Each structure stands twice: as structure tokens, then as C-alpha cells.
Length: 418
Image 1 (tube, helix red, strand yellow):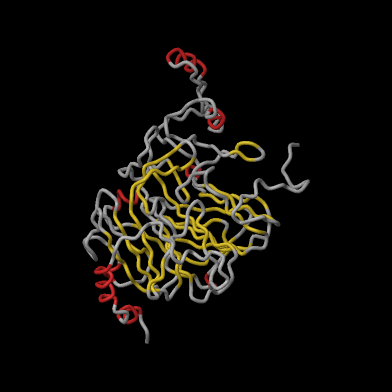
Image 2: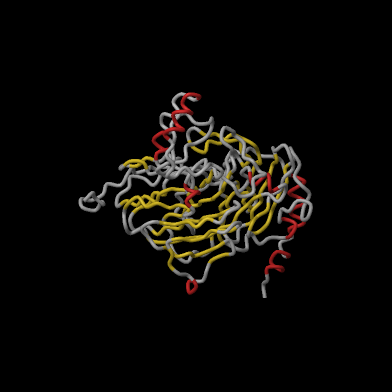
């Protein structure tokens, strides 16, 4: 009987690792080699689309797919008006999606350009213990300026993850993470559009530009693939397409992700595929910390359908949880007194927070800090921010790569004023 143990043991991985270290040289982060074949009809799977992100290219070397990740610090724009100093891989946080097939042998070179040591743990991947990436336990730490090599066969498939197991409170809080997609050798069904979303949360105090890794729960910025709404790209699909959305979560909060207009089946986790007999329909799926969920459905109704976290604070930006509650408070006398000290001051919050979005257009806030709500749609303010995007389903599409604009509703299908 073939077991995970004897399968891994038969690969001669110790000898291969020694030779890989002996001959390893850093390669350019821009090396493409055999680039990601997004239009090849020979592939046994549909390549993933990481919105606002990319797929990591590889080169083939003697039958091994060789990837290169560079851990580094850089500036990333979360949305126009907010740039953040983050740590990530190859110039993005989350890092590029690694994509391969069950049965492939992969070699991943990891170069550390951070100011401190690091490692990479391959979350959910079945591999030899010495490749598991836990600094001090299964390997030495990767020091600044060093390149380490991870090499292993892919014996399980699913939506998996990668992140450090070295000073992880800091390194994950400031953005070091990514998705590792391993396709099955024989996919059970055809998928037309396969999307990758990685959720994260940040503590970025108003007026600052570095995430605060010491914050435990009071986060104020919530991202999908390193962006906040309205800068998050939509998921563009054609009517009749079978959709898979892979959602990962490496933050500190569970996120109940809700899809409007459809029911979907949860078909997989970071532990692998869920048997069809155990699948059930949902419109919301909780994505726990340190896990992934695959959701699938057929997009048979056109429109602009929101996909978002259903924790209301997670669909707003720059939330401050220690601000006094002013709902129902008459602030007119207080407002006039404050104006004597601060000309132009306007009291807000008496009737709700929606007014903040309009005021943000003409009232300057703290530097490098987004307004709480910033989305504008065809009927006015969408009043969302943070972890919010849309699935745009259209009967006709010029291209999957081009946003089709707002949906043109047929006559008589829009709610109206009585």
C-alpha cells in the first residue's frame, strides 16, 4: 500500500536538497521561463485569476517546476489616497499565487531581503518534515541576504497557503502571506472562472503608513488581495459560467463571506475537497482564521452581485472604536463653540454615518487615511469600504480582463419610489 510516508520517503529528497543547496544561485524575480500558460488548451485545469494580483511564473529544470519568492519591504497602495509600508513577496502583499498540479515536483527558492530573518511554511501541503518551514524547529532561519531552497513533490491538492513561521506576529501582521493552489490531476468537473481571494486585516492608525503588529483585535482596515473597496477589482464572468472562488484567511478574525443573488456549494477547504454527499447550499460561508474555503456555483442571473464580509465593520475603512456615540445627540450648540477654535468644523454622526461619505469630498481628514465609505455606483453612494467587491455577470462580454461597467437593468426590474 502506498502511504504518505513511503511516498515521501521514496523521493530521495535529502540528496536532492543537498544538491540544490550546492548549486543554488539567486535568480531574478522577473524571470519568466515557461510562463504561466493562461490560454493553453493542453492544461487539465482552468488557471486561476488572482484579482488585483498575479500568478508566480516558473521555469522547468529537469522536470522540476522552479519558482522564486523574494521576501521584501515595499510601499503598496491599498486604494487611491492610502499607501502603506508592508512586507510581502515579489513586490506584493499578498504574494503572487503559486499554481501547480498534483504530482508535480516543485522547487521554491526563497531570498530574504528583509531586515530580519524569516522562513516560509507551506500551510496545508503534505511534505517532508524538514520542508515544513518552522524556524528553529524544522530548519535554520533564513537570514537577511540568504537564499534557501524548498523542494518536494505535490501529493495532495486543494487551496493551500504560505506564510512565515518566524517572528510571525510581526511578519504576518505586516503582510507576509500568499495562496498555493494545487490542482487535482483529474479535475472532477470543468470550471470556467477560478478566482483567488486572500483576506487580511490591518491596524493602521490615522495619519500613519505602517501597520501596527502589536494590535490584537482592534483592526481598522480590511482587505481582499491587499486592496480595499472601491479599489478591489470585480469578478467578471459570463452568464452560464461555472465559477469557483477560493477564499483564504490569514488574519485574526473569522470572516462570514456573503454572496448576493445566488446559493453556492462549499466544495473544499485547506484540508482538501469535500465529498459531494457532504456539500450543502449556502449564501454565506464562514472562513475561519488559518483556513480556506472553495465555493462553486453557476452564474445564471446577470447583474452586479456583491460579495463581502458580513461583519458590518469589515466593510468600512478607518473605523475607530473609541469614538463617542453621537447618535441622537443634538450637537448644534457644541458645534458653534468648536467652530470658534476650528473654523469650518462640522459635527457628524447625529443621524448616522452615511453623511461622512459626502463630507469626505470637501473636508480634509488625516493624511494617508481613507474615508470610512468611498464607493459610488450608478444610483449614488454605495456606502461600503474595506472587504467588499462584486461579481459582475453579463450575457455578453468583450473580455474577461475588462470591467464591463455598471449593469444595465431591464425596464421594470429596479425598485422604485411609491
